[in-house]
Every structure is written in structure tokens, then in C-alpha cells.
Length: 284
Ligand code: ARG
Image 1 (cartoon, protein in one colour):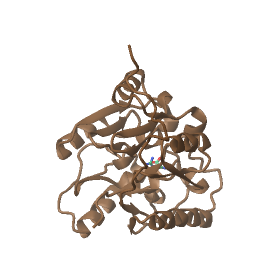
Image 2 (cartoon, protein in one colour):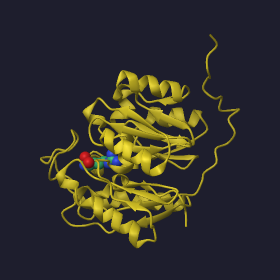
Image 3 (cartoon, protein in one colour):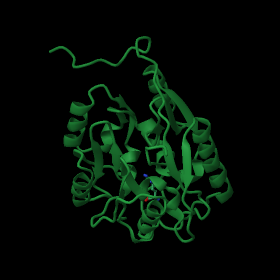
Image 4 (spheres, rainbow, N blue to C red):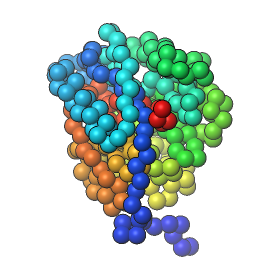
């Protein structure tokens, strides 16, 4: 059987085009690691709060320099994980599906993000009945919603999202607790191009990914472990942790422009670039 497709030859790949985005972020004013709800969080390990803010500011600055719009939601005391804005909601074509968190520690973040959207002119905002952790587990491609489950978002939450958005949703089972959200194991690079770490998924879900994305960029353990897949792409620039050197090399080979950043402090909460960035998609 001839191969379905081969990796694109960089010399023949048309140059990638960046599309301006609108991102929602939350300054880590009250960031700390005071509880542990994923294997990366160790409350005994010191965090430098000033450095956390400075690193986060660099990320925000970078998005602005790349021509994107960045909106800010006010950080709330007592919600140290609120900096991980990706978990706050899922927004497609102006429709907002609120988040419902699995852990009590983060429960109050759901309503806070929904409130932000209502206050900013979004009229179609759904408060969900089932657990979903926003873009932590829902990643939007040109054709589908890819949805993670196994640790946080529930299968019922997946069904609720598909019904609300009227967009086909592909459920994917995460099996390694270190990759507890889909956005720690897979990133969308362009319409229907992704990169992922196969070992983070169940055998069936791995087969689904191979079928849907036969030419995907695959991340090895070393790149996944430094949160290399927790990346944000505008179709050309891919912002990712600078330690993910193997991935950066692969991306360059596909015609993307990888940009490495250091978010060492926020990593101690189990998140990096993508976790800090909610893609509202439509610039307005
Ligand atoms: N401490 C947070 C949690 O465990 C980190 C969330 C990271 N966000 C993400 N989109 N993966 O819930």
C-alpha cells in the first residue's frame, strides 16, 4: 500500500500565514502552589511569585508584538490557578461554553469567566451541567472539536459541548496523569494540523489520531515532559516552552516559526503557554 501521505518538504511547503487572534489572559497576581491536583504541583516546592508575573508579562508582550489582541480578566484572591485562562471557557464563533471544574479548589473560576464574557458583550453563554475544563480539554481544529477525558472533563461534558456548538466532537482518552488535560498532550498548529504525544493516549485514541492526522508532528517523551505540547499557534508562529528543542526543530521543518519562552514558575502549577491563553478566536 502506498503511504497515505509523507511529511511536507519544507522547501515546497508554502510559507505559513499568521492569522490575528484575540486571547484572554489572567495575570498571576495571586499565583501560588498551595494545593495539589495534578502530579506537577508540590506545595513544598518554593515558587517565586515575582518571577511568575515577569515571565507571564513576557508572554503577553510577545503576543502583542506578534500582532494579536490580548484581553485581561481580573485575577481573584484565593484562586491561584486562575492564571490558567485556557480552562475558563471554550469559545467558537462567539458562542461561549462556560467551564465546570472537577476540583472544588477551582470551582469559583467557572462563574468568574462566564461573567467576563457576559460583561464583554457575549450573549450566548452557557453555564454547563457537566464537568468540562474549557480549552484545557477542548481543542478546536478546522473540522472538529478534539476533546480530552480520563482525568478532568467528563464524557457527559463532551456530549454537552457537541450539542451546544453543533460541531463534531472527537473524544480522546488520556491515560498518563502527567498529561491530565488534552492541551498538555496535543496542540493544534493550523486548521487540521496537530502535534501530539502518542503515549499520553489510550491505544484506541491513538489509532483515532493516526487516522485523522496521518502526518502529524509527534512529540517524544523529552519534549512532552517539558510541556512542549502546551503551545499556541497562530498558523505561523508557534509559541512553546523553550526547553522543547526537538519539537522546535520539527516545527521549523514544517515551515512554522517556533518561539521558545520560559514559564518555569507557572510550570510548577502544571501549566505553560497554552494553559495561560484562552483563544477567543475572533478579533473584535
Ligand atoms: N493547576 C492547574 C490544574 O491542575 C493547572 C491547569 C493547567 N491548565 C491547562 N490548560 N492545562 O488544574
